[in-house]
Amino acid sequence: MKTLEELLEETNKKLETQTLLVTNLQTQVTNFQSIIDQKDLQLGTSSELSKELEKQLKKEARTKKFYKITTTIGAAAVLLLLVQ
Image 1: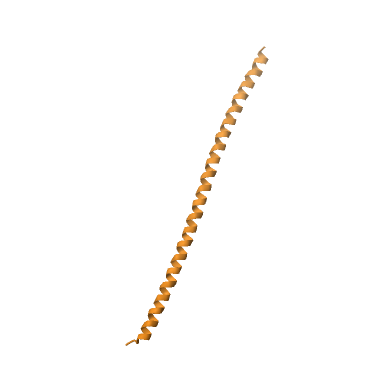
Image 2 (image 1 turned 180 degrees about the vertical axis):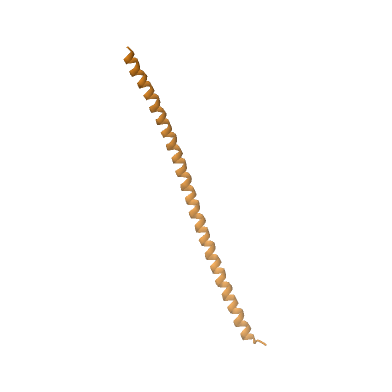
C-alpha cells in the first residue's frame, strides 16, 4: 500500500506533466495562429498582385490595339499618297 506522501508525490508529477502539456499546446496554438496570419498576408499580397497584373494586361491590350489601328491608318495614308 502506498503512503500518503507517495500518492502526493505521484499526483504532483502528474500535475507537472499536465502543466507541461498544456504549455506545449498553447505554444502550438500560438504558432499555428502565426502561420495563419502569415498565410492571410500572403493571400492578400497575391490578390493585389493579381489585380495589378490584370490592369497591366488590359493596358497592354489597349496599347497593342491602338498601334494596330494607327499602323493601318498610316499604311492607308501612304497608299493614298502613292496612288495620287
